[in-house]
Amino acid sequence: MKKINTKFLLPVIGGILLIAAGVVFLLNNLGLFQLDWGLLIGPLFAIGGLVFLLVYILNTSEWWALIPGFVLIGIGTIIFMGQTLSPELNRFGGAVFMGFLGLPFLLIFIAHREHWWALIPGGVLLSLALVILTENNSLLSGAILFLGMAITFFLVYILPKPAGKLSWALYPGGILGLIGVLMLFGVTDLMNYIFPVALVIAGGYVLYRGLRR
Image (cartoon, rainbow, N blue to C red; front, side):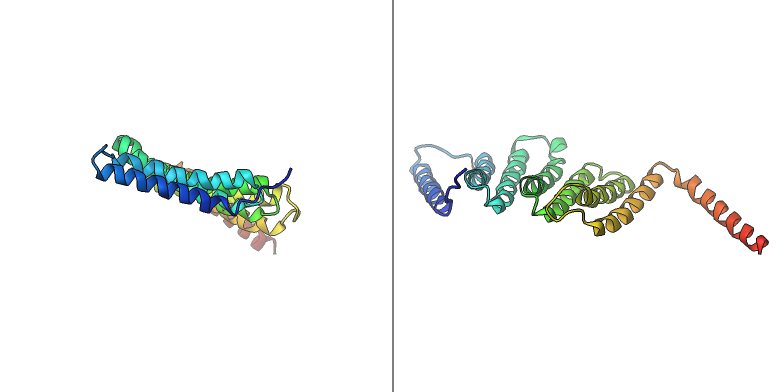
């Protein structure tokens, strides 16, 4: 498939949007109609994000355009949520924004496996989105964060990519996973039983070795 040269696209679309904005401002100042800026700012950010997504759609080698595209759409979404939704639903705004931050990195990894590094920020940001949803429980939030990062590094090792399997990813994945599991035990109060039992087993093993000698 022939790639389209998108170098001209951003200046052209940007110029058109600036002209359109100037006309709208002029008509508003002339009193021909009244703008509701509170409801307009969010969609404007989202439109800017769609321009960057169009750049990627026309030329998939411009993978970088996915990042500002989703970031601008995320900003526009949370602004629009703040203007239209109730305070109870607005508390999800941070999670929504983190999701929009993490999604482009996952798409970069899926479409361009040579950029395997994109899986790491994508996984971490989506883990943070889940953390925000459980912010009322600090132990559970911590467990989700560490387990999410652990899964991210395990995926870096498991998923196919031109670089092959990266064995170093198992080390941070294992450490983060262990911390996450321990924190999860703390949430469920299992640590109150597992830790003493582990001490008893360790002490019994030390005693057995000492008596055997």
